[in-house]
Length: 277
Image: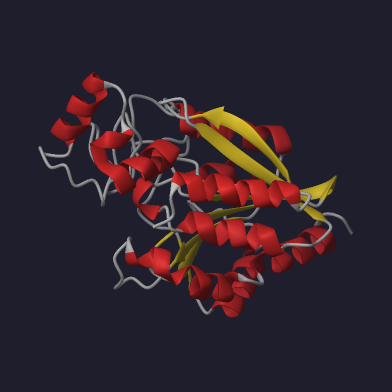
C-alpha cells in the first residue's frame, strides 16, 4: 500500500530532481493538495490529475512515475492526489479522521461498517467527481444525500477539493487535461456531444491498448466541466484490470505505468503541433 509518507518522499525526490512542488489548496481536514510541475511555462500546458476518488489511490504512484520520467519541454502540471482525506480514509479507516463528530457521521453514512476500502467520497461524503458545474445532478447514478459514492453535494463546487482543482484549472488554462481513475483499462472522451480533437484519445488508446468510448450517463465530472467550458480535449483514463481489487492495483504500479509511459509525450507533441505551432 502507498502511504502518506511514501507520497511525501516521492514528492521530495521530484523536488530534488528539479521539479516544482507546491500546494494548490487543502482538503476538508487541512491536508495539503499537492501539485508538481515540469517543463516550460510558455505555450500550451497539460494538467494531469489523479485520486479524485478515495478508493483510487493507486493512481497516485502511477502519475508520480509519469512525472518522474517526463523530460519534455511542454509544461505539465500534476495534482497526484485530489482527495487526500478520502485516500487516507480508505487506507486507514476512521483512525485517519481526527474530528470525533466527523467520525460518527462517516460511520453512519457507511452503514455502521468500519471498512472504508470502497469509499469514493471526501470527508463530507461528497463524490468530488460529480460536484462540478456540468449538468450537475443529472447523472444516472447521482444521489442527493451523503453516501460513500455518487453524492453530488449541496451545490456545484461545494467542496474545498473540487474548488481547488476547478480554480487551479482556471488559473493555468491547460490545453489538455488527463484525469486518472481506476479501473477498467479504458478511456472516456467528450461530453454531451462536445468532443474536441478526438484524434488525441485515439492516439492514447493505441499507445495504451485501452478502448476509447464517448461518455454517456455521467454528469458533473471534472472532465465534463473542462470539455464543455474550454472546447479543448479532456480525457478520463481508467487504469488497472477490472477484475482486480482496488488494493491489488497498488501492486500493479509498474505494469500500469508501462502501458501509460508514452501518454505525456503524446500529449506534449499534440500541444506542440496544435497549440504551439
